[in-house]
Image (cartoon, rainbow, N blue to C red; front, side, top):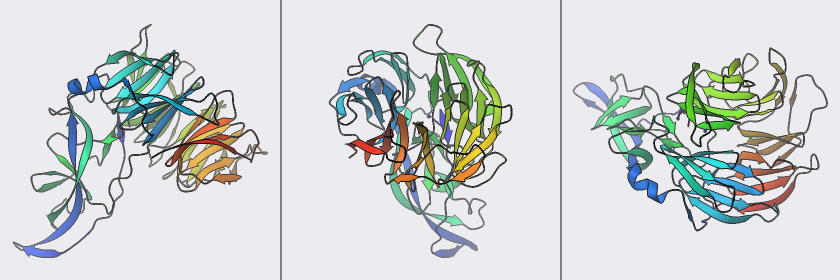
Length: 436
């Protein structure tokens, strides 16, 4: 976004090295990694983006969407792979949309909407194997427009350095810094992420003194925008904004939900909208989709939790922090939202849930540390804590159910898997598209 700016906090441990005395003050040398921003001129970039190109290998799979017999798989910093999935046992890569700036995508009717750095791009996918670029809205995500005089920030170059800090300096205990010349300053708002890429203030560079580099950009679960029906929900300037289409291709801003502040991510489902922010997870009623109404706020320390809705049941994944007023344990919390007050129904055991889906009454949880966990339909309606009936040993981070079937497409670090869940407790592997 922050699936927009999206908030992402690093918990780090400082490395302390050789000390010395300078002018009576103790100085400590710290190692750090300097991420120098890389900028892009959008005017130069646009003619090269959105064109059909030879289909490369899948490298950094991210979002996956189904459309008829086709899959659209976003590949971060590359583009969109189009897969003919008429036979899930033998999926075929048939085309590729070159778009290095891709950070989000969704489908409305016969149109594919894609975030491309600062722009919103619309494709006609009536012929899914050969999409046609219909319209580009420059700087649609206007919080990026003029981010710096040097262009739109798209990446960082890593450089290892050391810095000497006075132990009496108030910034001495800070683990994240901005640097200008050779002076270090504490970051007031830690680390921010825009479209999956880390951003810096103009003229300043980011310092990270953690033992390991910034975590892999292969996976994320923030959503910059989401679409349901004729409503387009966008995280912009840390607020949730509602757009409508007014019979046009490009959505038009309708109003901003001021109650949802410091927002990082949004996901739309039938009758429900899930909004992640600094305060936690807002669950909103969208039976009147243009005017969402707050149902419940689940406070949590983690603003980027996975979630899923089916019917009136909400599945809320917790990796750190608390799930509302119930507990602070990790797991997937299933709530019944059919009554005025949401009721906790069951808790599914998971250490690090990244995505959730329900297929053939089985709950699938992409647990980053344990694999793809499969939970059968519970026999009892009362709240219970449950463990997975089976675990598929893949490092999964994304799940997409193919409508009208019992098949799920699973995004994992080493491939795009397809499993048939027709027989509860006996998932059948159908195919794997490799990831290089």
